[in-house]
Image 1: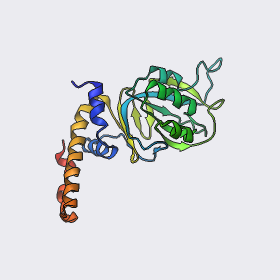
Image 2: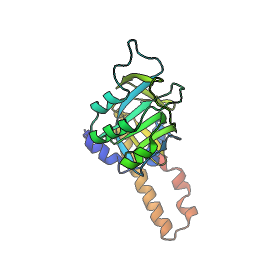
Image 3: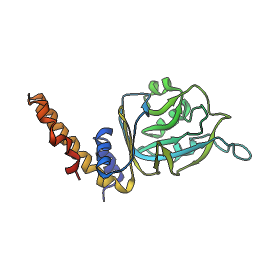
Image 4: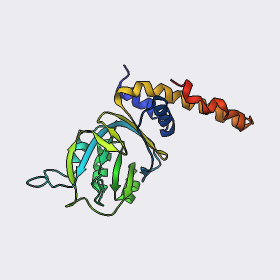
Length: 222
């Protein structure tokens, strides 16, 4: 079995579209539109650490600031995924957290919900993807329910330890127990499309290049 580092190294050579296509070939969910890259031009890939927020203050007050435990539990192969689906317009991630995550080596953050301090992420070169943006603070509005538990992104459940790739096209999660099936299919798709692009640039008619073989490409990928 390949190591986590080896699997991530293969994943980061791909793109979100190829991995999405590979999931399609298995009938799996995991690709998400409209979670935009808010800072840098970096593609990120890694394994997931999760944070779930809610709108009920813990009895006795909050024991820690949201996101801090996830940062401390992460390493340089981690992408933090935050679920902030309370319906309250406030950020689930901000500038101080981004700086702390960057120091820890975290590869980036994906927010199912709003993020703020967008300019600061760009200044420090830290990739953040989010569903929305807002200037509103989380203080006094939402709290951390837990970290390291399954969270919802779009209509799919994401587990700690799952794999993720995110770029300008979107965010794609791959279940940890399926990554070694999905990667070879995504790699084949990338190679086929590379050869097709080569043919187009060499002058081959695009109608021929993107004919029946392209439409049926996924059927022969597994």
